[in-house]
Image (cartoon, rainbow, N blue to C red; front, side):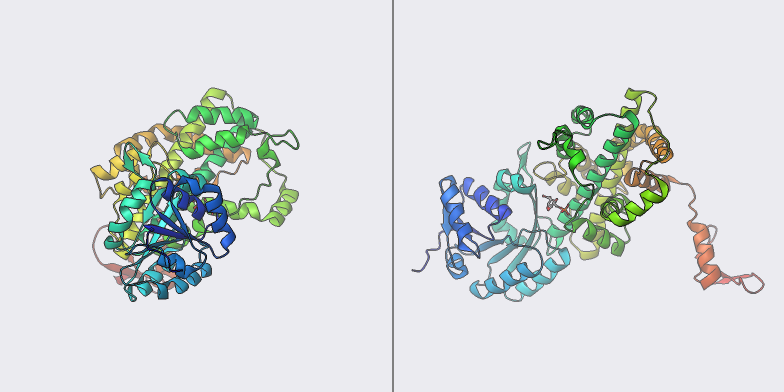
Length: 480
Ligand code: 6PG
């Protein structure tokens, strides 16, 4: 029996994220076509949640497509990579000019650019869309970062803006820019998420070492922090996780979890792209490498045997001062991570001609997503006031926070190094800050060395042009 075209939007791929997104759409009054390769998932969605709104289930992709009003909008919610390509290949012959295919998974932006170009040749819109917020967010209101054409946003915008998280009446969704812009921004979001989590983990480790405090006591400190400038989803759930007790052993949950952090790869993509663009996102890179280090169990075991596991025994002199030092160091390092992430977005936007609005991006990260935080409002204000801000670090609010935090930041990094507590993200963020503010950098010596061994030339501080010194000859300087 031919399907009637009644659905305003469709979701194919009904694993947890797809299922919750479909439910969110239905709960917001949209008629949602649903499809999954194995029909059991479609049936169970309708059986369990059919009363939440209007679902139009189909067991074949052809029926699913036929159930959609034109221009059709199909959200593909399958695994990134080959499975996404396979679904797109199946969909394309069923679609007609002007129809829209949305990839709402965590695809690499280069794949999105390739797919967008390929579908454009068929007269179709391909919209790579970042969606953040995990399972709960997908159901109750995620942060949505759609790329693709302005034309596709005319259809998708009203739908996505309705199902997104809302902060102060503003939806956490906006059109990011053409082709891969949405997935690029989502990638950087995840990179910042990696840095944020690494910094939180280092703060926890420092508090544990310096105060000999239990995870439950440290949970209280995070709870307290969550009432101030650091207020954020990740700080909130840190308190939750640290306060949790393992039912099987009665021990702190965090002590029974294997200390090897995994990743699906978006942090790695962020670092790879930043290397290509020449943007020093050191906080995100350290966070990504820290996860890798944690996973090298054999090397860790060998090093532990060879060197023992720590430096001096550490007892912070004054509890209150130490906790405040760690809080300020965390805030300053976090500002560095966000500053670097936004630099990265700006560089990507320039490279690919996306014209991404940085203040607008901060706006849609205020709710729904994993890195939602109070200070995203300050980031939005900073970029709205000065779109060409050289770095977020110099915007008044952040400059004040960092200036206030510097003495604490240094104390914490020094004490940690002395005690042998690894703080790769805290210390590299401080080094980045010191690098940016330095009057002179030893980069001058590197230029000299490059010229010495490879005649790579250098510029001078006192006159224009490039120069080379005849190192193996009479050391005269010549034009390079
Ligand atoms: C989000 C998250 C999500 C991601 C996880 C896992 O914004 O909702 O970023 O997209 O899947 O955070 O990432 P890793 O496995 O790489 O830690």
